[in-house]
Length: 291
Image (cartoon, rainbow, N blue to C red; front, top):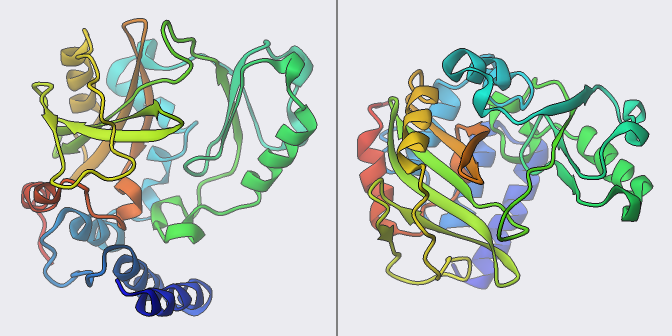
């Protein structure tokens, strides 16, 4: 997109975020991100169908599935407690946090959005006042306002304190994100920290890497060893996705034990086409909806 055209759409997005309808904002944001219009009347591509689901299927009534605390009951119903990380506590306000009784390592996760996390690896060396201010900032936000994903609109802001998950070989956990359609995993999006930044890539269910035609800056250019428990992760993703047209099931494998991460209904907020271009059409074809 030409510089001045991009500048125009950025101003339009900013304006519509304040004064526009959800559809007006999303259409402008999609155009800015992808330099092509969003087709909601006859959705074909993956992201177009995600946005169709956003406006016509996944309403505010689905909030429990994206609430990081409430979703645990759904996971327990489907799988039992064995795939859930240990909870230290859940709190309604920053002022309620009982830091003195927390272990030296722990994870703080706000329940009402994505990325509202603080990982404390050494409590004794951490400025807890800075942590509190960061959490207060997170708690003051309605994540729905960021991308207009209405599924987040009425999620109650709380702070979930979880056990810190130690790695064997690295300080950074590999995130295995399973794209599932009608209860069937179709693709694995792998994300981790590498060479100073978060990187990602795609694998199929046979653990064969799917490379983009053009390598982008966030592409993970090293191979990730096939997890020993890949088949178990696929089975977990299948059970957790069985009730939905599309959902991304995020899992971790720590010391060969699987932990549930979260359910995500709109990968990258449904605003960013996949970097492997052919997957946009292939995944779109799999989602059985039509306007």
